[in-house]
Image (cartoon, rainbow, N blue to C red):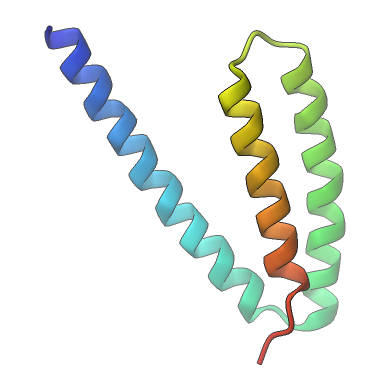
Length: 84
């Protein structure tokens, strides 16, 4: 039972870390000037494709791949949205 509790706690820690990174990345994308944001998004697409290729060749759950694809799309939408 202790292993299950430790695993659950670790998953919760990872979720918290991901939420913090998500908030940071959203803030960074919003703060960048248009030309810099465009360059970051171009590089992001390339790096996402490399990560996608790696994910296809390792044993990993479909839930992880689905979350990855969802967040890739979300970050691209955030990056392309008009900013003040």
